[in-house]
Amino acid sequence: MAQKSPTFKFWDIILHLQLLVLQFVRAHRTGDFILYVQTMEALAPWFCIMDHVNYARWLSVRIHDMKSLPEATKDELSKY
Image (cartoon, rainbow, N blue to C red; front, side, top):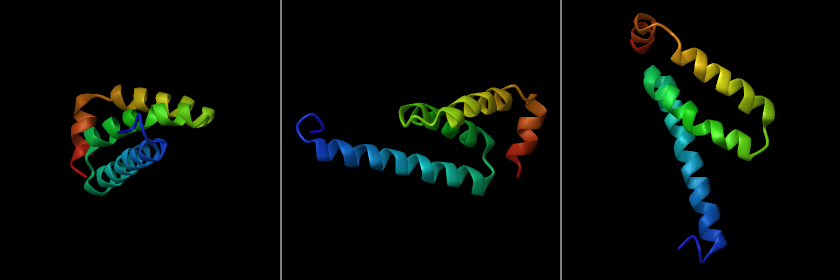
């Protein structure tokens, strides 16, 4: 359907982004560290696509830092 209708493609992209934002909010509210990192990884390409260079650059650094944390720290962060 997206190939035939540019309007459908637009709203499909908007829905996808909105779901990612809601997933990000859920990760914050529940304190789910793993979901938070996964959501940030899913959002990272969108910052490049939308030409937000600084956000894209520093988000990749933040994701790397979060993945580099020791397992004990990740477990502790997931409790909150």
